[in-house]
Structures are given as C-alpha cells and as structure tokens.
Amino acid sequence: MTVLKIAIAGAGGRMGRILIEAIAEAPDATLAGALDVAGAPGIGQDAAAFLGKPAGVPIAVELAEGLAGADYLIDFTRPEGTLRHLAYCAEHGIKMIIGTTGFDAAGKAAIAAAAEKTAIMLAPNMSVGVNVTLKLLELAAKSLSEGYDIEIIEAHHRYKVDAPSGTALKMGEVVADALGRDLKDCAVYGREGVTGERDPSTIGFATVRGGDIVGDHTVLFAGIGERIEISHKSSSRVTYAHGALRAARFLADKANGLYDMQDVLALKR
Image (cartoon, rainbow, N blue to C red; front, side, top):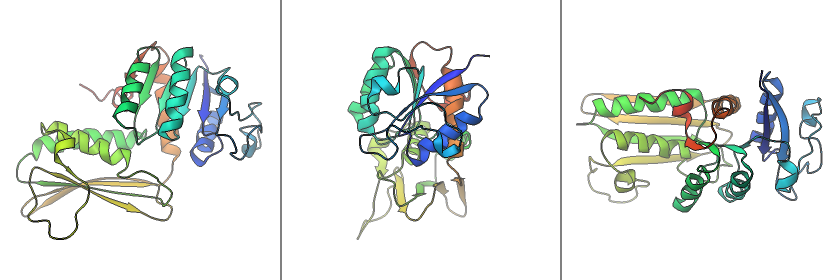
C-alpha cells in the first residue's frame, strides 16, 4: 500500500489540527510536514502533540523545512499564504490540495499556471455532501430555468473573514452556468433601501455571521405558488478533512493538472 506523505499548512489552527487527526487515523497517510506563520502558537513543537501521540514532525515557518519530506500539501489558510506555498510547491513538484477561499482573479490565474507543473485540487468546500449538492443544483437550475427567482443564503461562524463564502459563490457559479449566465453579470450581493422590483435574471446572496456556525448553505428557487430549497448544513469540519484526504488519493497518479472535487467524486459527465 502506498502511503501518502502529507504536510499541513496552518498546522496549529482549528482546521490544521482536524486534518492532522484525520491523517493519524488514516491507514494510508502519514504526517510528513507542518507549517504555520511566524509567531503562531506551537512553532517548533510536535504538530501532533495535542493528540498525545507525537508524530516527530515539528511545526515550521520555513517552507524548505516544513515541506522537506512531503509529497502533498493540504492548505486551508489565507490567499496570501497559499500563494506563497503554491510557488514553492510548483517549483519542487509537491502536489497541493487547496481549500482556501477568497482568491482574486490574479490568484486563480497563479493557481492555474502552477497546475502546469504539479497536480492541484482546488475546491472552496471539500465536503462530499456539498459537492453532491452542487450536482443537484445544476439539475435543479436547468429544470427551473423559467419562473423561479434564485437566492443563496449562507451562514458561518463569527471568525470567517470573507463573504459570501467560497461555497456560496461556487453554488452561484454552478447555477449561473446551468442557466447560461455569467455570475459576474447577474449576482446581487446586498439590498438596502428602495431597490425596485427584483430583476428575474439575478442571483441574490445573503450572508449571516455569528457564533460557532460551521457552515450552512441554502439555495432557494422561489416560484409562484411554490418554492424549492436545496440545503447543506455542516456540523463538523471533519467532513472537510475526509474530503481533503480523498482528494490526495485522487492526485496520487496525477503528475500535473488542475482538478476540483467534482473530478474527485466522478460527478462530471
């Protein structure tokens, strides 16, 4: 059995620890590196010490140290950090599983360029359930293309720094593509005051931030006399970790290329 040698970015954070625990429980994966920003708690300490089962992998700041033994990097950090890691991974042939959200057009272009040198799986949400939901949204949008107003409502914890969420935006992109629209031209991200009647060609977004909500997403198709709601609610970040490991397994035989979770789950036609 091939063992996946995986490094974790943001190893001292909440998601980083969940990923480290998932790797410790996986029979085909091992923790091979750990990264975090300078000044973060735990720098220099064993990345798995919190489990009571040290892995012999200290949390490093320098990329060369933190990625020396890794073939994969799982990164759920911030765009600026991920792009720094991206350049190093592309240069050294380290495969990446990127769950970071909030990339601008230049960041997305950099990821696409790096994918010519190494294999990258980029997804705003790695939950298997969310990605099945995206497939359901594609079907629903095609069937409800006329006479239904579309709104996307998402809720996350108080610490989330970007809005709408990357998952909500991905849902909007899937719906817009299914309708033959460009989300950039039809998205409405806020309403206030006298807005006039709703333009039926738009896709609206509403954002909620509070407490410890892991992630709730609902796409509402509102027609006359009925409405359809397709929802996904996360109660634990563990689903993201399991999806990330599934993505690493998918990339095992890929030398380069840019993929998403729809590829991993074989949901593309």
